[in-house]
Length: 103
Image (tube, rainbow, N blue to C red; front, side, top):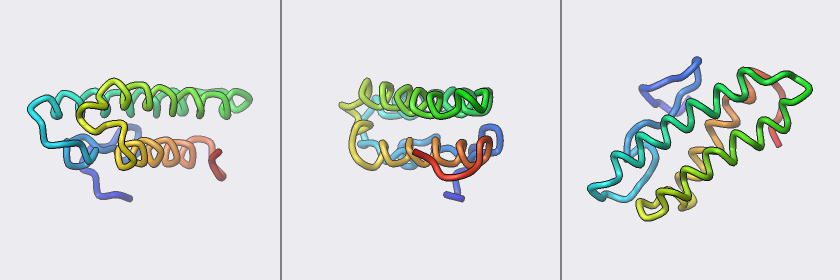
C-alpha cells in the first residue's frame, strides 16, 4: 500500500519520523512512537466495532489520532502531511474491516 514496514492487523502504518513526515527534532522519535501507538489503537477500534456502531467508531478513531497529532504539534504532527497519514490509516482500516467508502 504505502510501503511501510510496520503493519497492525494487516494495515500498513507509519512508524518513523520520516514516515509520519515530522520535523527533524530531538523529540520527534517520541512523537512518531506515540502516533504509531495511536494508529494501532485506532485500527483496533475499527476492527472491533459492531457494524451498527462503525460510523461513530470511525470518527472516534480519527479523533483519537488527531488528538495525538495535536499533542505533538511542535514536532509538526498537526501539519497537513501527518494528518493525511492518520486519515490514510483510518481509511485503510475501514476498507479492511468494514468495507466500502469512508466518511
